[in-house]
Amino acid sequence: MTRFFAKALLAASLVLAASSAPSRAEPQHGLSLFGDLKYPASFQHFDYVNPDAPKGGTVKFASIGTFDTLNPFTLKGEAAAGIMQIFDTLMTPAADEPASAYGLIAESVEVAPDRSWVIYTLRPEARFQDGSKITPEDVVWTFDTLKAQGHPRYRLYYADVLKAEKIGDRAVKFTFRNGDNRELPSIVGEMPVLSKAYWEKVGFDKTTLDPPFGSGPYKIAAVDPGRSITYQRDPNYWGKDLPVNRGRFNFDTIRYDYYRDASIALEAFKAGQYDIRIENVAKNWAIGYDGPALSAGLIKKEEIPNQLPQGMQGFAFNTRRPLFQDARVRDALTQLFDFEWANKNLFYGAYTRSRSYFSNSDLAATGTPSAAELQLLDPLKGQIPDQVFTREYDPPKTDGSGNIRDGLRAALKLFAEAGWSVKNGKLVNARGQRFQFEFLLAQPEFERVVLPFAQNLARLGITMNVRTIDPAQYENRMRDFDFDMAVVAIGESLSPGNEQRDYWSSAAADQPGSSNLMGIKSKAVDTLVDDVINAPDRVGLVTATHALDRVLSWGHYVIPNWYLPYFRVASWDKFARPKVTPPYDLALDTWWIVPQRAQDVEAKKSQVQAK
Figure (cartoon, one colour):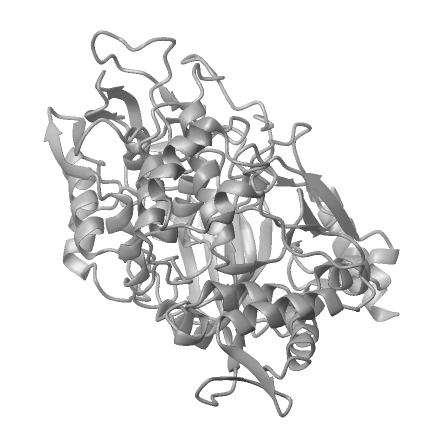
């Protein structure tokens, strides 16, 4: 995911911070959903940074697969890792507030009392990396071009933004369809600003390996197509002394090396080929780092808590396939995934089962619907599952022994209701067609999770073929919705909003490259997405999100997986980080290299590897 959309998920649904609606629009230094901003206009730096952090050194990361473009804004190609750090946005979020943003390229922001428009005033010192001034014309061109030629998700994201126009020498006004969508003032604030002169010259709607320039803290220093990309901190970065940037962007050089798969990347990390690794495989975390470097204390493993909503990871059904269009079939297959066995035998008991699309937050629906939720759900009766009104969604449970007789019985009943039965050891429909499909993977290590699931399905005569392909091919197939079942991870924020259209809407289901991988096409879901987007306040937002969560969960669009409420980070022990850890981000851009530690690690690394 690009930095732009990571920001969008972290800081969506923002509104002007004020104790009461002003009688007229007044310039402010930031936006917040939950009332007053934490940081006043006079703040000098975020609390979770070290403002005196030393600059210098090189940090290396790993990426899986390949890349073929340095243009991250279109559907074409696979963009290079880290590319968004060369582009600045109008506003930037704070990682220690649940939903806030402060001026970056924008000096100030004014929101209409009825939220029908927002005006961003640009900083006079804001510059692109070629030294040219960032102008309102650049902002207007960026908005128009992203909406017309950019990745399809931009059209969904900006659907309610009618126009952008220059007003005065340094200001841009965005006009909205109406004032109901509370997040629109910040939606446009999260927009990266591109150089009109540059992109009109080189062409926006094509892939390129010619390094573009932006206005951010890093420049592209070197490109080895498909293999590595290196960024260099710009010593002339126009925004380096802004309060929002102080104590950040401390590495002189950032390099991403590409590896064929995650298992090779892990071995490369242990050999010291790169420096920091975010681990998402429980087995790796438990035993995969064992070796001389870990024993010698050269590699450090940390579990860093966070308060981020965990969203939903799951085995996604492509409901565009006739096989998966019956919700009873999807429910039946859900009965056959034994999470408790997998957690005990594969994950070292590390995970919590996902039971919501907004796990680990107050946005997760619990119990039965409240009176406020029923006001949204009652008009949808007949369009949504009946269980929404009577039961809390909870995935099926086992005792972890591997005995899933209860699940098999429940699945057989559901299959029978949907017209499937077991004949001669095979699950078939009334026409004698066998129940078989493909599970598409890009990570070989996930096979150990999926293959036991396939064995459970085989007990009912279902054939699930597991196919692992290279990441580039996988990306293309997922982009074109060319799969039966696959693993999806859908991130959420504390303030969901416009991005929900890209996730669940009927329009997104038909748009290649959208995040609606399951192909959900439901007028009821569309209505609830609009309710989330147009929620008048935080209470209304939570209510609407609960309602949406219930309908998605009882729709059985995924087989829920699991989550962790912390980051698992392995690093070679040459880094320091601030004493305060922000609750809503890992904030690697606040870390720095300690030169003496780095020298010691390099010296000892050679000794350890020689043994």
